[in-house]
Amino acid sequence: MANKTLSSQNDIMIKILWDFYNSFHGSNKDYLLIILYVPTVLVGVIANIFVIIVVCKYHLKSVTNYFVINLSMADLLVATICMPMTISQEISMSWNHSEFLCKLTSYLQSVGVTASIYTIMAMSIDRYLAIRNPMILRYICSHKNIILVIVSIWLASMAFFITIYGAMRLQDPMTEVINKALDLASENFTHNSISPTPPGFNMCIEDFMSLGIRRDVFGSIYFVFSTAIPCLVVLLAYSMIGFTLWSKKPPFDYDNRESVSSRQSSKLRHERKRVALILLFLAILFALCWMPYNIAKFFIDLDVIGPSTSTNNTLKYFLFLGHANSALNPVVYCWMTRGFRQKLVKILCCISTNLSHHDPLRRNAMTIADDVPCIPCKRKLITVTKEQCVLAEQQQKSFISFQQLFSGGSNSYNLKRINIELKNIYDNSNIQIAPGHNRRDQRQNKDKYELKSSQLESSTLCTTDGQR
Image (tube, rainbow, N blue to C red; front, side, top):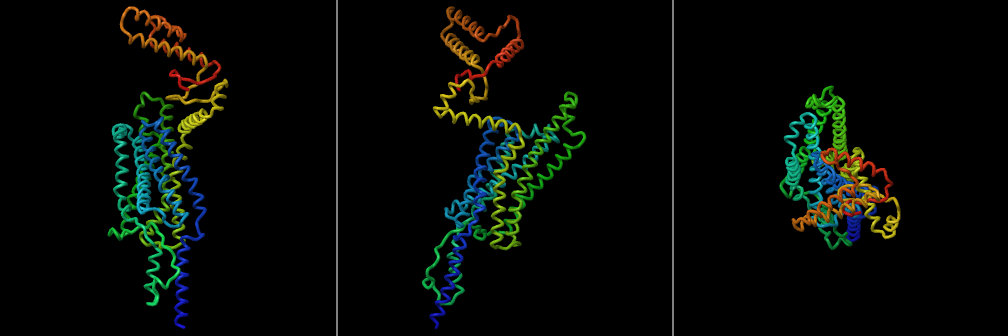
């Protein structure tokens, strides 16, 4: 009878342990969350890379665009490291990677998110100074100082969250559950009596107690410095920006009131409103995406919300909402900025053309055709005619010949040849330069010639260096 009772208890214990194991490795995966993450990762990586390329190619000298690049780099960090690790953990329900990746993923996520919010805070302060005190902005916000601010943001974020790197570790919950079950069971239960025993697996968890730090204290400090203070500064800055912009007489209208017309002043105010609204929208979007997760994590750290299955599932979707912000930022910036869209289309056109040149059939068809789509040049895209291409090649040959003569020695024969080559250059260009004309007259004549040439039928694209 005793053996039968012991066998029954053993079966119950084994069932409990296997139910616990199956809760992590069973069929209860959240496929909806996985489906949502995959396009978010793709959009986040591709869109942020394009933002960095466009801004570096066209707008690197703008102070605001320094911050835009920094924001895209932080978003790219989250999209390339944190999101794929989250997808992997959601698929397997356990941590199948090394402890180093466990530490690195949580650490970089905290660093990237904090760098993003402090970059947005710096952008709001920059916009406030640009609108309220533009003279102070020119003095303070130099390119050197902006780079120093960006570096300081990253260094402060990395230094503060080194604690999270140390607190993250791998834990085998299966082994701990078995040990606790044996402690609660009678003396007749041993590891050998529980058979078959579920295999162990690892989970990536926070363990601040091993560092001698209380979780609620660290959670409170984290919430204050990474969420509350930046959001308060952003709210205050944009409130003052709104009050300044929508007042009847903004301060920047008085900077050059004698030289700036009322129409120009209105246009300037409208442009600054547009930029401020774009950055305000990015700040609101960041708050809407990350605030639910940060608040929920703050309440969990304070033990206001206890651990449960519903809490963990809700926290997963809150984390996805925060990760989605890294994909939404570049999309919003592109959608709300017309100049950015135009430059992005140019880059995409160049990429498409480069890919088409690798296809022999496509390349032959382009050679025969009269009209050719845009082809990338060294600095910009230009469209010229056949006659302009021939003229450019003639000018290039003449200048090369002139350079060779100039470097060949200073004798009378070379001087005569130089005069002949210079005359050929002007004759080939069909630009008549009368003696005594100044540079303005020469430029006007050249503009008239270019206007006349642009009216001819377009057939191909080239530059003076012969590249296509």
